Length: 159
Length: 159
DNA sequence: TAAAACCTTCGAGTGCACTCGAAGCAAGCG
DNA sequence: CGCTTGCTTCGAGTGCACTCGAAGGTTTTA
Image (cartoon, rainbow over all chains, first blue to last red; front, side, top):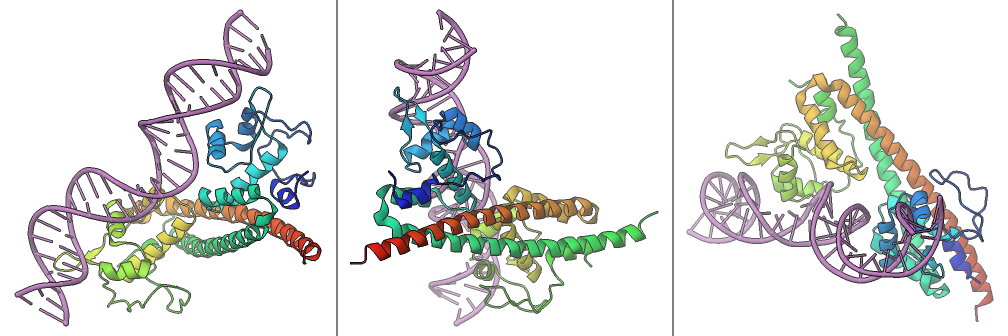
């Protein structure tokens, strides 16, 4: 059985109406979700090298193995990789994600630490969004400037 | 005299009511805007090394020099550095910014190319904002999950 | 049964964006 | 006058996140 916090992290209880995931061929239902590494490569776009590297540096939970030692990824592993991918997009350093993964492995005692880490991350993400919106405004301003200049040039130089 | 497109790039015509710039001690008005490199360091947070490097790789317009050869940055150089800083935040590679700077140097003929480059960049920035908002939603979901779990733990284990 | 996929460990290479130091000299300021 | 700041060129180093290849083995699958 898993703890509440683990459920929060690994996403076992993901609602099935999740329909906005782009490059997934198809996941199998829980119970048949023992993907080979090459399937995960296809799902995530990461290389097998990178997946093993993630494991080495402690960025993954312990991955199940077949009776002969081959990796068998579960839906929750895939969900975790989705989260990692999202956090990567925010610019979070891998080291921080590893720290977070450690907290998850350490169990419910680290609940507060994780909560705080999530909130700090949220603040960062919000700040980054604000920065980008600022940049977007500059870009829009410039673009409209160019559009005006373009119209001027077009009306004068249309020989 | 400068071309319209240069005015768009270098921001000479920046409205003076620009009050949201954080770590600027104070700019001097146009005409007295001949900053030393160390002043620009203070303004931008970049190192002198990095400023010279930007110049070497073609990321800067040609910087004025004093009669003895020292760099004298103008307000428009500062504006350009602001833009570069913003674009850097969007994750735009330096090589792309150099390309853009080249177009600016090449003059009004490159107007269309620059316009398209700006629009492509805007699309990228919008996409990045969307990704981040997606991530934010995941984070919020997780955080509220944790908050609920926290209340449950608090009410049961509050001895 | 042969090819394809998987495993391990090891270490080196890549690309980006700086980042730093050193040498050796010129200019500015207090 | 001396200290600070600036200039040049050169080349090496850093940190991050992969990325790749090889060697030498086992397992799966068509």
